[in-house]
Length: 138
Image 1 (cartoon, rainbow, N blue to C red):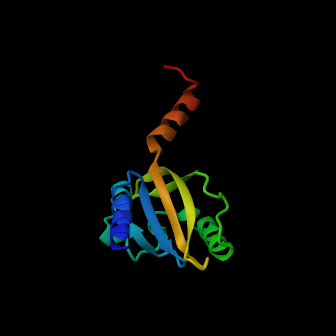
Image 2 (cartoon, rainbow, N blue to C red):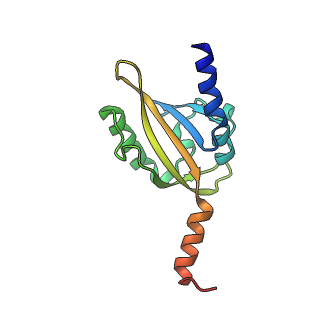
């Protein structure tokens, strides 16, 4: 079991996408190396903080409504499908991130929290917006 636990930890830490786990209260309890690189907060800075750390202020109310609904129902609205959303880095830079969410449950099916996998797609989205604004002109 110890070897399996170590392997799981290595996988999470070495995954190229940000892995963020928050408990039922929205407190960050897992923050991998890629999350630190994406958002600019070290694990020491992020752990124990509320998810508002990376959620732009104008999106917080909607986020928490969805989060609470997921904690209560035991499933996410998107059922694992990726969604494009905004996030904010430590420096205040606004990011576009593609995220997937999953509920984390114990053996009895009790919801323990939620895990998010995030990827920075800012450059792609900004390029698409530029092409749309300029109608593909060069």
